[in-house]
Amino acid sequence: MAAVDTLVLASASPRRLELLKQVGIVLDAVDPADIDETPLKNEAPDKLVSRLAREKLQAVIPRHLGCWVMSADTIVACGKRVFLKPIDESEARRALSLLSGRRHRVISAVCIGTPSGEIHHRKVSTSVSFKRLHENEIEAYVQSNEWHDKAGGYAIQGRAVRFVRSINGSYSNIVGLPLFETCGMLEGLGFSIDGSK
Image 1 (cartoon, helix red, strand yellow):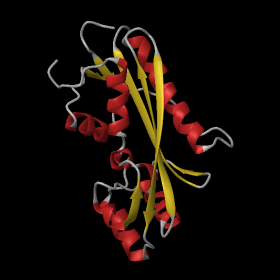
Image 2 (image 1 turned 45 degrees about the horizontal axis):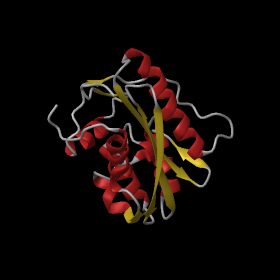
Image 3 (image 1 turned 180 degrees about the vertical axis):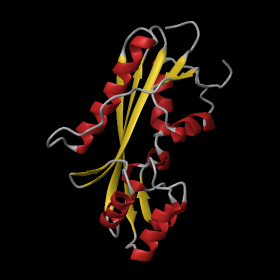
């Protein structure tokens, strides 16, 4: 293990940064991975999210040898259908319409690379049930612009919380990072979480 816990986050997500800060995890660097996130043909949601998290980690580790490196990826899935970040208002409307009145899964994969070169992986799934959305509700939400850069086209920590009938699992996972599992992984591997580096 490195003498100093130097942690690099391979993500530019402001939500992940805020969540880590919330639990006292101090980052030494943020180094987003630039990878192609296009799903492979017939790739299952669980396989996709795990692959993307691993590829992000593997892209960033060589730039920070001897450090702790963490990557994560989050997707929304309804059955075998994957909802990535909408590219425009039309895609956001379509995503919300398809999630309306249905249960879906928010799946995150977290990968941690240790200073000694080990790679550890954890996947977390949260079940979310939406109420049936009226067209005017969908349109008002799309016009709020909260859907930008959000898997599934919504942010539970924002206005979309009023669409949520029930949650089974980690709330922070829906926001973008399962904190309980992430902190458990880091501490179990020997990383000190105390915010006093």
